[in-house]
Structure formats: structure tokens, C-alpha cells
Length: 309
Image (cartoon, rainbow, N blue to C red):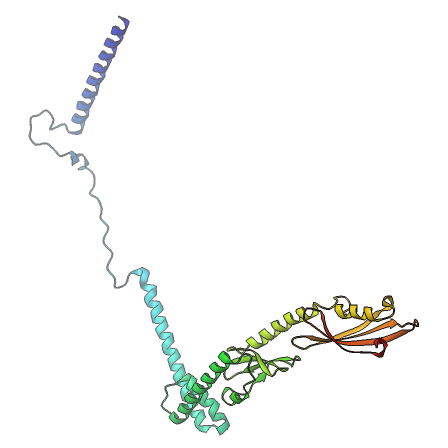
């Protein structure tokens, strides 16, 4: 019974809520449109009529069309600037070429060739001095062929002195440094390293500075390899000093004075000067000249002082 009473109360509340909602809807419609509802009139306003009192929406005018969009205007300006710069450069080249032509006509025989070379670089299509410029072009082609051959085939070959007439005379890069020296052929823009001992090309490149760089690196690495066989404290040759100890009467009396060496490519010539006591206890001086391998071992004893004989 209690559940039936609760269901009845719930149904009654739902009905009352529905009626209240329906009534509120009718009142709202009358407030919005008091003249058409329940009057039987067929003249019903459209739902959008509630917005009729609002002002009409504003429209923005379309921008005037231009030939180039603003975001691309800088492209046109940059192109115009490039064209202007190119025109100025061309005018400057023409002016320089005319000045060179005047100087060539007034130059001596020695100066004329250099000026013609400059004119050929500046204006290769000039019609003036055609015969001389044609000869220069042919000479340049021959020089280019000789330069390419030297770079491609010259390594470990004899110094090609017969090419100097085409490539120009070599100039030494820096002071002479013993066995190896770096050279440059400026007209051909080639640099090479000469092995003076074998009279052959140790390095060659199509760059005027590469030979000096290569030689510096080569000598640094070569020195590291050779000096690995010498004692870092007093400069004595480790293997040669051991041999001397085995030859003298009193090894404990040995005193190292000086060691010098000469790099001979596949070996090193080493001379060591020393002092030691002889069989009578007298301190005497001696020396040893030997050939040492690059790994530090002794290849051959070439000569010794009388104290070791």
C-alpha cells in the first residue's frame, strides 16, 4: 500500500510539472508574437522575424586588385636590384677592357704579354688583337694539358724539367729543409714536393699551397717515427747505446756525450760520441757510426773509434 501511494504521488507531480511547462511555453510565445497566435490568421511570421529589429550586418569592401600580391613584391624588387648590379658590372668590365686596349697599344714587348693575358681573362670574346689572343688561347690549352698530365702521372717520377717552358719556372716555397723541398708553379697553379735524394716527385697537387702543407705534415710524422728509437731524455739511440755497452770494458763507466742522425729514407745514419774507462781504468773518448732501421734496431755498424777495435 505504501508503494502504491508513492507511485500515485510521483505520477501527480509529473503531470503538474508538464502542465506548468506547457503554460510557460504559451506565455513566452505570446510575448514574442502577440498578433498571430490563436487568432486564426494565416499570416504567420517566419521564425527569423525575431531578428528583424536588429540592424543589418555590415559588409567589408573588397580590396582593390593589384598586379603583384604584397607578399611577393620583394621578389620583384630583388630581381630589379640584381639586374641593375649586373648592368653596372658589365659597364665596369667594358671600361676596364677599353683601358687595357689603350695600355696594350702603348706597352713595351715585355709588358704586352701580361696585359694581353689580363685582357683575355676580362673579355675573352674581344675582336681586337685577335692573332695574339688566339696564340695565347692555344698556349693556355697546351699548358692545361701539360698540367693535367703532371698532376695525374707525375707522382714518384723524375722532376719534369722539360715542362717548365709551358708551366713556368718553379719557385721554392720557404727555405730548403734537407732532403725534401716544396715548389710552386704559379702560372699552372700546381705545387709539388721534390725528393732531392732520389730526384723524384714525392707529392703533387693542383693547388699552389698544398705542397707546403703536405711537406710540413710529412716531416712531422717522419720525425716522430725516426725519433721513437732515441731516448727522450738525452737523445741517445737506445739500440746503439746497448751495443756500445756490450763492447766496452766497464759498462758502468759509460757516459753519453752526443748523438746525431741523418734520415736516409729507408734507414737512419746514427753517430754516438761517448766516454768510458778502458781496461786500465783511464777515461777515454770514443765514437760509433751505424745504420739503424726505422723501427730502432741496428742494421749495420759502419765504423768505430780505436778504443772499440
